[in-house]
Amino acid sequence: MAYIKEDIELKLKAGLPIPIDNAGLMRIPTFRVIADIGLSIYNLYLAYLLIDKNSLDKQMNKNMTNFDLFFANCYHSEEFKHIAFNGLQLFFNHEPSLEINGEDYFINLEGQGFLNRENFMDFQEILMISNNVKVSNEPEYKPGNSKAQEMINMIMKNRKKQPKLKEKMNLQSIVSALAWKENGLTIFSVFDLNIYQIYDGFHTTNNIDNYKHTIQGLYAGTIDSKNIKLADIHWANKINN
Image 1 (cartoon, rainbow, N blue to C red):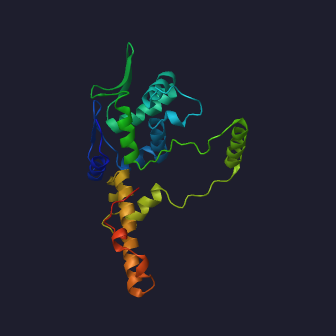
Image 2 (cartoon, one colour):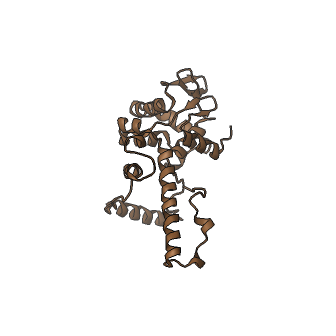
Image 3 (cartoon, rainbow, N blue to C red):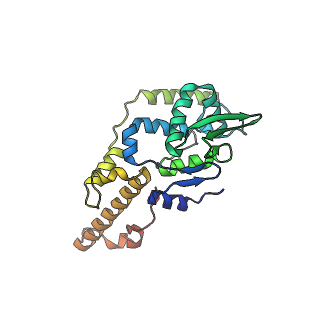
C-alpha cells in the first residue's frame, strides 16, 4: 500500500494510531511514556528499528532489503533482538517473535499481524516521520581511487578527534519552550503530546513569532517592505521540516 505523507501527518497530529498493511495498528507513544522509558533508551530503539543497509561500509547484495538485515541481526544477536523487540512492542503493543517457514520469514506481532519485506519499509517511513528523523544514505565523500580513499580515511579519523560542538537546542529544551510559552500548554499537558506534535507545535509557534516580529518591524520602519513577501512568511504556510 502506498502511504500518503499528508494522511500520516494528520493522524499523528490527532494522536491516532496508524494502520500498516498486515501489521495492524502502529501507535506513537506520548512524551510522558518516553520520559518513563528514558529518552536515551527510546533513541536506541529508533536506531535499531531504522537499520539501513545503505549505511553499511561493505557492499551488500542489491536484492537485500532493510528487513532482511533487521531479521538477520535479530536472529544472530540476542542483544540486538532484545532491544529491537522492546521497540516493536512499544509501537505495536504486542510481543514480537521471529517466524521461519521454509524460505519465508517474518516477525509475528502476537497474532495482530506481521512485519516482512513488503511492509517493513512502510513501518520505517512512518517511524521517521513521527519522530522527525532524517536519514541520509549518501556518503560524505566518494573516493575515485585507492589514494583518494586513504585521504578520506585520514579526514574521517581526524574529524573524530575534534571536540563536538554543544547542542544549542534538543528535544527536551523544545518541550520546555513549548510548556512555558503562552500557547495553551503547560509543563504537565505537554507530556501528553507525541514527538510529531511537539515538533509541529514548535515549528508553528516559531513561525508565528517570526511573522509577528516581521509585522512589527514593518510598522516600525526597521524592515524594508520591498524585501518581504508576507504571503511567503505567513505562519499558516505549510511547514517543511
